[in-house]
Length: 418
Image (cartoon, rainbow, N blue to C red; front, top):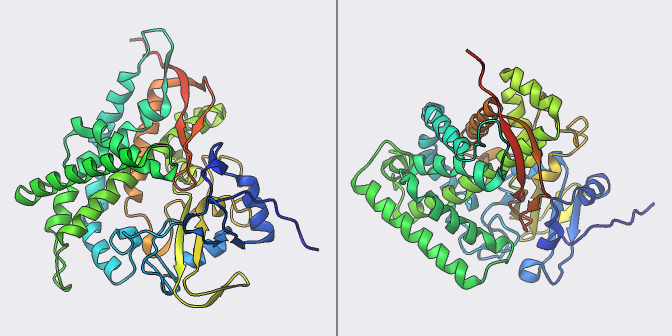
Protein backbone atom coordinates (compact mmCIF):
# COMPACT_ATOMS: atom_id res chain seq x y z
CA UNK A 1 0.00 0.00 0.00
CA UNK A 2 1.34 3.42 -0.98
CA UNK A 3 1.46 5.83 1.94
CA UNK A 4 0.56 9.44 1.25
CA UNK A 5 3.30 11.51 2.89
CA UNK A 6 2.51 14.95 4.25
CA UNK A 7 5.90 16.66 4.15
CA UNK A 8 6.17 20.46 4.27
CA UNK A 9 8.71 22.40 2.24
CA UNK A 10 11.97 21.61 4.05
CA UNK A 11 13.80 24.26 2.04
CA UNK A 12 11.53 27.01 3.41
CA UNK A 13 12.52 28.81 6.59
CA UNK A 14 8.83 29.22 7.40
CA UNK A 15 8.61 25.48 8.09
CA UNK A 16 10.97 25.94 11.04
CA UNK A 17 9.53 29.04 12.75
CA UNK A 18 8.07 26.91 15.56
CA UNK A 19 11.04 24.59 15.84
CA UNK A 20 12.04 21.45 13.99
CA UNK A 21 9.16 19.70 12.12
CA UNK A 22 9.55 16.35 13.87
CA UNK A 23 6.21 14.97 12.64
CA UNK A 24 7.37 15.18 9.03
CA UNK A 25 10.57 13.30 9.78
CA UNK A 26 8.76 10.55 11.67
CA UNK A 27 6.96 9.88 8.39
CA UNK A 28 10.18 9.98 6.39
CA UNK A 29 12.08 7.64 8.70
CA UNK A 30 9.26 5.13 8.57
CA UNK A 31 8.23 5.29 4.92
CA UNK A 32 10.90 7.09 2.87
CA UNK A 33 14.31 7.24 4.58
CA UNK A 34 15.87 8.49 1.34
CA UNK A 35 13.30 10.82 -0.20
CA UNK A 36 13.46 13.16 -3.17
CA UNK A 37 12.44 16.71 -2.26
CA UNK A 38 11.03 18.39 -5.33
CA UNK A 39 12.07 22.03 -5.79
CA UNK A 40 9.67 24.79 -4.74
CA UNK A 41 9.80 28.53 -5.21
CA UNK A 42 11.79 28.65 -1.93
CA UNK A 43 14.34 25.97 -2.80
CA UNK A 44 17.89 27.32 -3.33
CA UNK A 45 19.25 27.05 -6.89
CA UNK A 46 15.82 25.82 -8.05
CA UNK A 47 16.97 22.21 -7.66
CA UNK A 48 15.52 19.29 -5.78
CA UNK A 49 17.58 17.30 -3.30
CA UNK A 50 17.64 13.96 -1.50
CA UNK A 51 16.60 13.91 2.19
CA UNK A 52 18.29 11.26 4.35
CA UNK A 53 16.52 10.83 7.68
CA UNK A 54 17.50 7.61 9.51
CA UNK A 55 20.47 7.26 11.80
CA UNK A 56 21.88 4.31 9.86
CA UNK A 57 21.84 6.06 6.51
CA UNK A 58 23.03 9.42 7.86
CA UNK A 59 26.06 7.63 9.32
CA UNK A 60 26.60 5.79 6.04
CA UNK A 61 26.80 9.09 4.17
CA UNK A 62 29.16 10.61 6.74
CA UNK A 63 31.42 7.56 6.52
CA UNK A 64 31.62 7.70 2.72
CA UNK A 65 33.30 11.00 1.82
CA UNK A 66 34.55 9.71 -1.53
CA UNK A 67 30.98 9.08 -2.63
CA UNK A 68 29.36 12.00 -0.81
CA UNK A 69 31.58 15.06 -1.05
CA UNK A 70 31.62 18.09 1.27
CA UNK A 71 33.01 20.13 -1.61
CA UNK A 72 31.32 19.22 -4.89
CA UNK A 73 30.48 16.44 -7.33
CA UNK A 74 29.40 15.72 -10.87
CA UNK A 75 29.79 18.78 -13.06
CA UNK A 76 29.14 21.35 -10.32
CA UNK A 77 31.80 24.07 -10.06
CA UNK A 78 31.21 24.13 -6.30
CA UNK A 79 28.86 22.68 -3.72
CA UNK A 80 29.36 22.93 0.04
CA UNK A 81 27.42 21.90 3.12
CA UNK A 82 24.36 24.14 2.64
CA UNK A 83 21.43 23.21 0.41
CA UNK A 84 22.42 26.09 -1.85
CA UNK A 85 25.72 25.85 -3.73
CA UNK A 86 28.37 28.04 -2.12
CA UNK A 87 31.39 29.58 -3.84
CA UNK A 88 33.42 29.16 -0.62
CA UNK A 89 33.21 25.38 -0.87
CA UNK A 90 36.72 23.99 -0.95
CA UNK A 91 37.94 26.97 1.10
CA UNK A 92 36.26 26.43 4.48
CA UNK A 93 37.39 23.42 6.52
CA UNK A 94 33.89 21.96 6.75
CA UNK A 95 33.49 22.26 2.97
CA UNK A 96 36.68 20.42 1.98
CA UNK A 97 37.55 16.87 1.07
CA UNK A 98 40.74 14.97 1.74
CA UNK A 99 43.65 15.32 1.30
CA UNK A 100 43.32 19.11 1.69
CA UNK A 101 40.79 18.71 4.50
CA UNK A 102 43.02 16.30 6.42
CA UNK A 103 46.08 18.55 6.06
CA UNK A 104 44.34 21.59 7.51
CA UNK A 105 42.53 19.54 10.15
CA UNK A 106 45.87 18.17 11.38
CA UNK A 107 47.18 21.69 11.94
CA UNK A 108 44.00 23.05 13.49
CA UNK A 109 43.57 20.04 15.80
CA UNK A 110 46.79 21.01 17.58
CA UNK A 111 44.83 23.88 19.09
CA UNK A 112 42.03 21.60 20.30
CA UNK A 113 44.03 19.05 22.28
CA UNK A 114 42.32 17.78 25.47
CA UNK A 115 45.09 19.38 27.54
CA UNK A 116 44.64 22.79 25.93
CA UNK A 117 40.85 22.66 26.28
CA UNK A 118 41.04 21.51 29.92
CA UNK A 119 43.20 24.55 30.72
CA UNK A 120 40.23 26.75 29.88
CA UNK A 121 38.00 25.38 32.65
CA UNK A 122 38.94 27.86 35.38
CA UNK A 123 38.56 30.81 33.00
CA UNK A 124 35.19 29.53 31.81
CA UNK A 125 34.00 28.98 35.38
CA UNK A 126 34.85 32.59 36.21
CA UNK A 127 32.99 33.79 33.10
CA UNK A 128 29.94 31.70 34.04
CA UNK A 129 29.91 33.19 37.54
CA UNK A 130 30.15 36.75 36.20
CA UNK A 131 27.39 36.01 33.71
CA UNK A 132 25.02 34.83 36.46
CA UNK A 133 26.07 37.73 38.71
CA UNK A 134 24.92 40.13 35.99
CA UNK A 135 21.35 38.78 36.10
CA UNK A 136 21.21 37.98 39.82
CA UNK A 137 18.03 39.07 41.66
CA UNK A 138 17.96 41.20 44.76
CA UNK A 139 18.46 39.16 47.94
CA UNK A 140 15.32 37.16 48.59
CA UNK A 141 13.83 38.30 45.31
CA UNK A 142 13.10 36.74 41.97
CA UNK A 143 15.26 37.29 38.93
CA UNK A 144 14.43 37.25 35.26
CA UNK A 145 16.35 37.27 32.01
CA UNK A 146 16.44 36.00 28.46
CA UNK A 147 18.16 32.65 28.90
CA UNK A 148 19.52 32.76 25.34
CA UNK A 149 20.90 36.29 25.13
CA UNK A 150 21.77 37.01 28.77
CA UNK A 151 23.15 33.62 29.83
CA UNK A 152 23.74 31.05 27.10
CA UNK A 153 25.42 33.41 24.61
CA UNK A 154 28.10 34.74 26.93
CA UNK A 155 30.19 31.66 27.65
CA UNK A 156 30.66 30.44 24.04
CA UNK A 157 31.43 33.97 22.88
CA UNK A 158 34.07 34.55 25.50
CA UNK A 159 35.48 31.04 25.05
CA UNK A 160 36.08 31.75 21.37
CA UNK A 161 37.66 35.09 22.28
CA UNK A 162 40.00 33.24 24.66
CA UNK A 163 40.90 30.70 22.00
CA UNK A 164 41.63 33.33 19.39
CA UNK A 165 43.27 35.86 21.66
CA UNK A 166 40.57 38.47 20.95
CA UNK A 167 39.90 41.04 23.69
CA UNK A 168 36.84 40.04 25.70
CA UNK A 169 35.42 43.55 25.48
CA UNK A 170 35.01 43.07 21.73
CA UNK A 171 32.69 40.10 22.14
CA UNK A 172 29.39 41.98 21.84
CA UNK A 173 30.35 43.67 18.57
CA UNK A 174 31.61 40.31 17.29
CA UNK A 175 28.39 38.61 18.38
CA UNK A 176 26.28 41.22 16.61
CA UNK A 177 28.24 40.79 13.38
CA UNK A 178 28.02 37.00 13.60
CA UNK A 179 24.26 37.13 14.22
CA UNK A 180 23.71 39.43 11.26
CA UNK A 181 25.88 37.43 8.87
CA UNK A 182 24.12 34.23 10.01
CA UNK A 183 20.77 35.86 9.29
CA UNK A 184 21.08 34.99 5.61
CA UNK A 185 19.72 31.63 6.78
CA UNK A 186 16.48 33.44 7.60
CA UNK A 187 16.49 36.41 5.17
CA UNK A 188 15.25 38.71 7.94
CA UNK A 189 18.05 41.25 7.39
CA UNK A 190 18.65 43.28 4.22
CA UNK A 191 21.56 42.05 2.15
CA UNK A 192 23.32 45.42 2.48
CA UNK A 193 23.32 45.12 6.27
CA UNK A 194 24.61 41.54 6.06
CA UNK A 195 27.37 42.63 3.69
CA UNK A 196 28.43 45.43 6.04
CA UNK A 197 28.52 43.09 9.06
CA UNK A 198 30.44 40.50 7.06
CA UNK A 199 32.99 43.15 6.09
CA UNK A 200 33.40 44.23 9.73
CA UNK A 201 33.90 40.62 10.83
CA UNK A 202 36.43 39.95 8.07
CA UNK A 203 38.39 43.15 8.76
CA UNK A 204 38.47 42.43 12.49
CA UNK A 205 39.74 38.93 11.77
CA UNK A 206 42.45 40.29 9.48
CA UNK A 207 43.65 42.69 12.19
CA UNK A 208 43.73 39.91 14.78
CA UNK A 209 45.52 37.52 12.42
CA UNK A 210 48.18 40.16 11.70
CA UNK A 211 48.62 40.73 15.44
CA UNK A 212 49.02 37.03 16.20
CA UNK A 213 51.37 36.64 13.23
CA UNK A 214 53.81 39.26 14.51
CA UNK A 215 53.17 38.70 18.22
CA UNK A 216 52.36 35.01 18.83
CA UNK A 217 50.59 34.04 22.04
CA UNK A 218 49.66 30.73 23.60
CA UNK A 219 46.24 30.75 21.91
CA UNK A 220 44.61 28.65 19.22
CA UNK A 221 44.92 31.31 16.52
CA UNK A 222 48.70 31.44 16.98
CA UNK A 223 48.87 27.65 16.83
CA UNK A 224 47.02 27.69 13.52
CA UNK A 225 49.09 30.53 12.05
CA UNK A 226 52.51 29.21 13.06
CA UNK A 227 51.88 25.45 13.18
CA UNK A 228 53.78 23.26 10.75
CA UNK A 229 53.37 19.81 9.26
CA UNK A 230 56.88 18.91 8.04
CA UNK A 231 55.62 16.04 5.87
CA UNK A 232 53.21 18.29 3.96
CA UNK A 233 53.88 20.74 1.15
CA UNK A 234 53.24 23.53 1.88
CA UNK A 235 53.85 22.85 5.56
CA UNK A 236 51.88 25.85 6.87
CA UNK A 237 48.48 27.35 6.15
CA UNK A 238 48.39 30.29 3.77
CA UNK A 239 46.69 33.60 4.58
CA UNK A 240 43.41 32.61 2.93
CA UNK A 241 43.22 29.32 4.84
CA UNK A 242 43.83 31.10 8.15
CA UNK A 243 41.17 33.70 7.33
CA UNK A 244 38.67 30.99 6.43
CA UNK A 245 39.43 29.19 9.71
CA UNK A 246 38.77 32.39 11.67
CA UNK A 247 35.44 32.88 9.92
CA UNK A 248 34.31 29.31 10.54
CA UNK A 249 35.38 29.08 14.18
CA UNK A 250 33.73 32.26 15.34
CA UNK A 251 30.40 31.53 13.69
CA UNK A 252 30.25 27.81 14.51
CA UNK A 253 31.80 28.10 17.98
CA UNK A 254 29.50 30.84 19.24
CA UNK A 255 26.21 30.02 17.56
CA UNK A 256 25.69 26.30 18.11
CA UNK A 257 26.78 25.98 21.75
CA UNK A 258 24.65 28.97 22.72
CA UNK A 259 21.55 27.11 21.58
CA UNK A 260 22.58 23.87 23.27
CA UNK A 261 23.10 25.60 26.62
CA UNK A 262 19.82 27.55 26.45
CA UNK A 263 17.71 24.58 25.42
CA UNK A 264 19.44 22.30 27.94
CA UNK A 265 18.54 24.62 30.81
CA UNK A 266 14.98 24.95 29.49
CA UNK A 267 14.49 21.18 29.24
CA UNK A 268 15.79 20.71 32.79
CA UNK A 269 13.40 23.40 34.03
CA UNK A 270 10.50 21.41 32.51
CA UNK A 271 11.67 18.25 34.29
CA UNK A 272 12.18 19.23 37.97
CA UNK A 273 12.97 15.66 39.02
CA UNK A 274 15.84 15.47 36.55
CA UNK A 275 17.00 18.97 37.49
CA UNK A 276 17.19 17.98 41.16
CA UNK A 277 18.80 14.62 40.34
CA UNK A 278 21.55 16.39 38.44
CA UNK A 279 21.96 19.00 41.16
CA UNK A 280 22.38 16.25 43.75
CA UNK A 281 24.64 13.99 41.68
CA UNK A 282 27.07 15.78 39.37
CA UNK A 283 28.49 12.43 38.22
CA UNK A 284 25.46 12.46 35.88
CA UNK A 285 26.84 15.53 34.10
CA UNK A 286 28.66 13.71 31.25
CA UNK A 287 25.54 11.80 30.19
CA UNK A 288 23.40 14.92 30.68
CA UNK A 289 25.69 16.89 28.36
CA UNK A 290 25.48 14.21 25.66
CA UNK A 291 21.69 14.13 25.96
CA UNK A 292 21.55 17.90 25.59
CA UNK A 293 23.61 17.66 22.40
CA UNK A 294 21.35 14.87 21.07
CA UNK A 295 18.20 16.73 22.02
CA UNK A 296 19.19 20.12 20.64
CA UNK A 297 21.29 19.10 17.60
CA UNK A 298 21.95 22.80 16.82
CA UNK A 299 23.40 21.93 13.40
CA UNK A 300 20.24 20.43 11.93
CA UNK A 301 21.50 19.18 8.59
CA UNK A 302 24.59 18.82 6.42
CA UNK A 303 24.54 18.75 2.65
CA UNK A 304 26.78 16.49 0.58
CA UNK A 305 27.09 16.06 -3.19
CA UNK A 306 27.22 12.69 -4.92
CA UNK A 307 30.52 12.28 -6.75
CA UNK A 308 29.32 9.29 -8.77
CA UNK A 309 26.18 7.34 -9.51
CA UNK A 310 25.31 5.31 -6.43
CA UNK A 311 22.49 3.66 -4.46
CA UNK A 312 21.46 4.69 -0.95
CA UNK A 313 18.56 3.15 0.93
CA UNK A 314 17.32 1.57 -2.29
CA UNK A 315 17.26 4.89 -4.17
CA UNK A 316 19.41 5.56 -7.22
CA UNK A 317 21.37 8.77 -6.81
CA UNK A 318 23.15 10.38 -9.74
CA UNK A 319 26.52 12.12 -9.73
CA UNK A 320 26.12 15.81 -8.89
CA UNK A 321 22.82 15.46 -7.02
CA UNK A 322 22.47 17.07 -3.62
CA UNK A 323 22.18 14.72 -0.64
CA UNK A 324 21.00 16.36 2.59
CA UNK A 325 21.50 14.39 5.81
CA UNK A 326 19.26 15.51 8.67
CA UNK A 327 21.15 14.98 11.93
CA UNK A 328 18.20 16.11 14.04
CA UNK A 329 16.08 13.38 12.47
CA UNK A 330 18.82 10.78 13.02
CA UNK A 331 18.92 11.79 16.69
CA UNK A 332 15.21 10.95 17.08
CA UNK A 333 15.43 7.56 15.35
CA UNK A 334 13.59 4.93 17.44
CA UNK A 335 15.72 2.23 15.83
CA UNK A 336 18.70 3.61 17.78
CA UNK A 337 17.27 5.54 20.75
CA UNK A 338 14.79 4.11 23.24
CA UNK A 339 11.88 6.56 23.58
CA UNK A 340 13.70 9.14 21.43
CA UNK A 341 11.27 11.95 22.25
CA UNK A 342 12.00 11.72 25.97
CA UNK A 343 14.73 13.92 27.43
CA UNK A 344 16.80 11.72 29.78
CA UNK A 345 19.93 12.94 31.52
CA UNK A 346 21.05 9.35 32.23
CA UNK A 347 20.61 8.08 28.66
CA UNK A 348 23.26 5.48 27.85
CA UNK A 349 24.39 4.50 25.35
CA UNK A 350 23.82 7.68 23.41
CA UNK A 351 25.15 7.29 19.89
CA UNK A 352 23.96 10.68 18.68
CA UNK A 353 25.36 12.49 15.67
CA UNK A 354 25.03 15.95 17.18
CA UNK A 355 28.74 16.51 16.53
CA UNK A 356 28.60 14.85 13.12
CA UNK A 357 30.41 11.61 12.35
CA UNK A 358 33.40 10.37 10.40
CA UNK A 359 36.15 12.57 8.91
CA UNK A 360 34.26 15.79 9.63
CA UNK A 361 33.47 15.02 13.28
CA UNK A 362 33.35 18.37 15.07
CA UNK A 363 36.83 19.58 16.06
CA UNK A 364 35.33 21.67 18.85
CA UNK A 365 33.27 18.86 20.41
CA UNK A 366 35.29 18.74 23.64
CA UNK A 367 35.16 22.53 23.97
CA UNK A 368 31.38 22.48 23.50
CA UNK A 369 31.03 19.73 26.10
CA UNK A 370 33.14 21.74 28.54
CA UNK A 371 31.11 24.91 28.00
CA UNK A 372 27.79 23.11 28.56
CA UNK A 373 29.22 21.36 31.65
CA UNK A 374 30.54 24.61 33.16
CA UNK A 375 27.37 26.64 32.60
CA UNK A 376 25.07 23.88 33.84
CA UNK A 377 27.14 23.47 37.00
CA UNK A 378 27.03 27.23 37.60
CA UNK A 379 23.25 27.36 37.12
CA UNK A 380 22.68 24.35 39.39
CA UNK A 381 24.83 25.94 42.08
CA UNK A 382 23.03 29.28 41.89
CA UNK A 383 19.45 28.87 40.67
CA UNK A 384 16.33 26.96 41.61
CA UNK A 385 12.70 26.97 40.48
CA UNK A 386 13.63 27.95 36.95
CA UNK A 387 10.61 28.48 34.73
CA UNK A 388 9.82 29.98 31.35
CA UNK A 389 7.72 33.14 31.62
CA UNK A 390 6.90 33.50 27.94
CA UNK A 391 6.70 31.57 24.73
CA UNK A 392 9.94 30.57 23.04
CA UNK A 393 10.99 32.20 19.80
CA UNK A 394 13.00 30.04 17.41
CA UNK A 395 15.56 30.99 14.84
CA UNK A 396 13.86 31.22 11.47
CA UNK A 397 16.19 28.81 9.71
CA UNK A 398 16.43 25.20 8.65
CA UNK A 399 20.20 25.07 9.23
CA UNK A 400 21.22 26.24 12.71
CA UNK A 401 17.91 25.67 14.42
CA UNK A 402 17.20 26.40 18.06
CA UNK A 403 15.98 28.92 20.60
CA UNK A 404 16.37 32.56 19.76
CA UNK A 405 14.55 34.11 22.72
CA UNK A 406 13.19 32.57 25.92
CA UNK A 407 12.34 34.69 28.99
CA UNK A 408 12.78 32.85 32.29
CA UNK A 409 12.33 33.57 35.97
CA UNK A 410 14.43 32.10 38.77
CA UNK A 411 15.68 32.65 42.29
CA UNK A 412 19.20 32.31 43.59
CA UNK A 413 19.73 29.49 46.08
CA UNK A 414 20.00 30.99 49.54
CA UNK A 415 23.49 30.63 51.02
CA UNK A 416 23.79 28.12 53.84
CA UNK A 417 23.71 29.55 57.36
CA UNK A 418 27.01 29.64 59.27
